[in-house]
Amino acid sequence: MVGKAQEATIDDKGRIILPKEIRKSLGLSAGMKVKLNVESDRIIIEKVISPEEFITRMNGFIKKGSKIPASDPLSLKQIWK
Image (cartoon, rainbow, N blue to C red; front, top):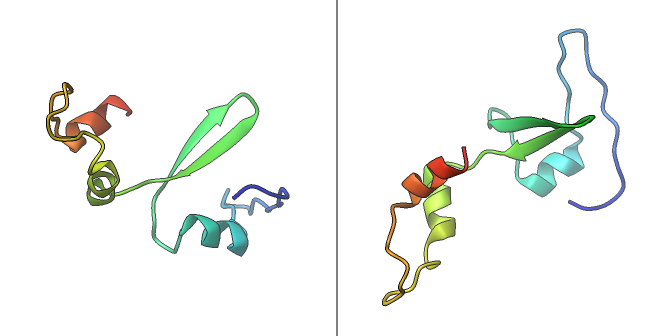
């Protein structure tokens, strides 16, 4: 989602409720996991994808007959952790 910044409030337990528009645009729902990173003075919230979703997204990136050796997508995912 690119657009106007939105505000949220931190409650006394440190929780932040993401605005509905942001949750909807990222496909986030109750119980889903997100990854938090701190960069300078910013908190980056990223949607965590399941191994199955990762494999689906990676399907077709390496074509048959390519000089790139076939790899297990889950092994590749470990590189980015």
